[in-house]
Image (tube, rainbow, N blue to C red; front, side):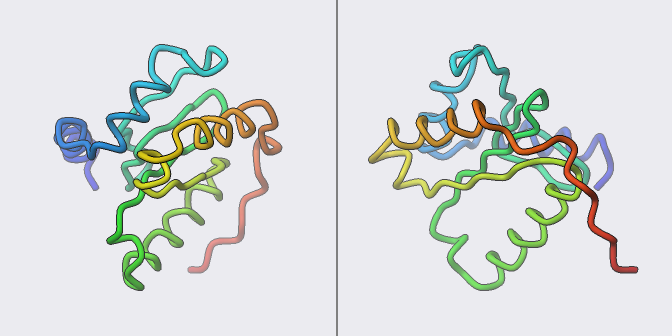
Amino acid sequence: MAKSRSIILARDMRNKQTEAEKMLWLKVRNLQLNGVKFRRQQPIGQYIVDFVSFEKKLVIEVDGGQHNESSTAAQDSKRTLWLEDEGYKVIRFWNNEILENMEGVLTSIMEEINHPHPDPLPSRERVK
């Protein structure tokens, strides 16, 4: 994905956030979680992640029901492996988790912030 194309797509996605994404953004923006800066709808490589802290190498994905479908789940797995190869920890929450249990979601995010994975993660050998 061309850099300018991914930036345009990310901007468009910011304007079309789901209700769960909007609610979570209100809680993680402006350094509210332990002073950690998060960005939303951020391009990383060929992907656009929902939320990322570059400082903590933490990606937060917010998934709707379409992520239950096998083709989408396979794409999510491929994307997660690529992000992990780049040194990111990826955590996922379902929309309904955020809408119904925001405190639990924030607790899980704080646990990752306070106990980050080793950085950088060793790269996996890429299949050619």
